[in-house]
Length: 191
Image (cartoon, rainbow, N blue to C red; front, side, top):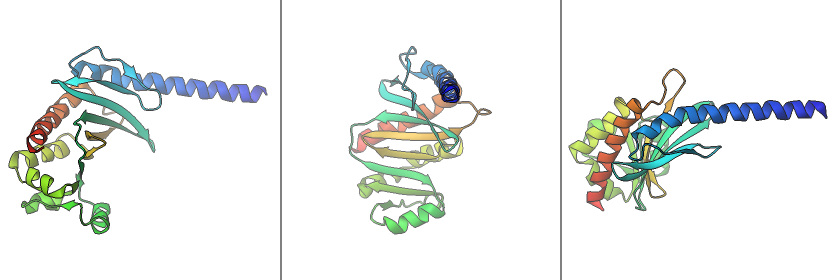
């Protein structure tokens, strides 16, 4: 009985420390939002939500398999499906499993570096044919270490992993949100 109480206390302390730590990571990010006073919400997946340049955004912290990932989600209200990531062995396999959603551009260098899966594929192929869009995507991956850009559940999302030595600071997050906002504006033009 007493051992169970000790285990419960230890568990509660770990959860409290994790909760406090997550809030410490997300709280400074509220400064990049238009509201600047957004509160951290959620326990299992903490997040901050508000607006960035008038666009509805949510910054969520995921902790899976020992990795911390900051996910930025912009609400679009569009039913599109989009996934952009660096080309890997897994994306080559996915290309074979989902050939109808695999999207290519006329730029061989871009196609060699990135795997794009989308629906409607023709819409995103024409969108990615624009040099400024490809440049923005490349900058997000190369300069800002984005792992994936995707659109699902009516949200355009970008995520990157970080660890304690590379904090998610407002200075790191603001340029990513700026780039994502540019992508959103261009997506608005194709709808």
